Picture 1: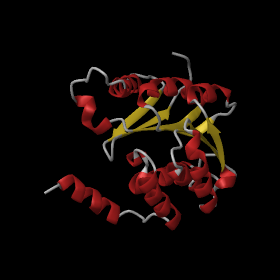
Picture 2: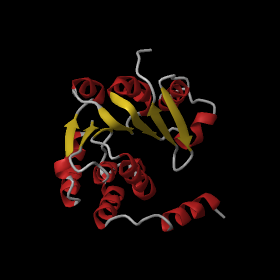
Picture 3: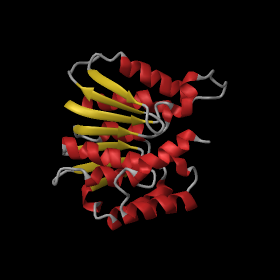
Picture 4: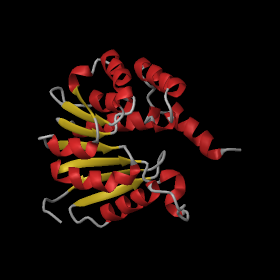
Length: 217
């Protein structure tokens, strides 16, 4: 008996259902797009929406749009005058994400960027109340270092996949660049005096960080 699968199904059954638009996006991503597991999905999407509902951010930065599921959830929880800045490196995903942003009625709340986040982030002259990192794991610490000064005092940073399917506890494969990136990120955050943090062991692990002080390391 697969207890983990049963527990996940139970959790989904006791979580506010996806909207029709999110359901269609979830299904289309799984049918048409490579590596559909990268989609945030039902439970995580609802979690993101509820976090936004609690803190009511005016500006959000998302690193890793993919097909737009998490962006829609974040945008739905934005302050009425808020804006989500979302970055995706793969231009072939832009049309699909844009289409679903329009279907969800949040297109006006989202500013899309296509390209390398390491280049784009420094060029965004904004500060943020919430940052969500869900992109290439090798650069997690780079994204953190580039965004933490853009995070307002008291603001939150979330990073997905920080348990990395349990690989963080296993011997490293010789050609594995992602797991070391996650380990480096987790260790750095744990020892960063500017923040307080909690690693939530749900789905593939979510690091939640709250910025408590400003200064350069």
